[in-house]
Length: 194
Image (cartoon, rainbow, N blue to C red; front, side):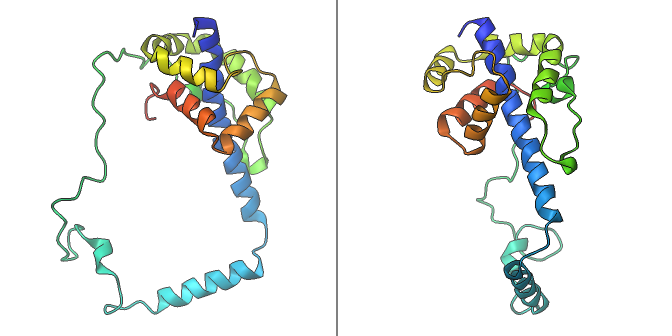
């Protein structure tokens, strides 16, 4: 994948992940504002009843295995819950380069509803110069064969997309289409914290 195509793919893949997250937050806020259904009220009441009946005899103490102070020994053969990722030997210092979401600085409040995709894409376009070194690093570090295979499986993301086309990709990403999810993951894998 040549550099101009990679730039589009990288920016749009990061945009898909961020906008999918913002849309899911907006939907969650909208759902919270809806009054609960009768079935939901019954489920909450049933759960509250079960919790109120918990006592020392029927509590599942294995849930506290390894937690100091509860007298349940840890399983010595268990893998640690969190492991530090190994440091990449070739990682370059990008501490002075903003991360994607910082550079895009899209501040629509998810409590106000789903974000405006066209305005979001304008923010991404304005952020592109600030992200240049981050994109260059990702391009140099990416597995060319993997990118070529993924781009062949999900053509179109490596070209400029208008809001309508971007929404079509976003819907595919939100529906967990394997090719789209894999392409986004490959393009974002060098981002810190991902």
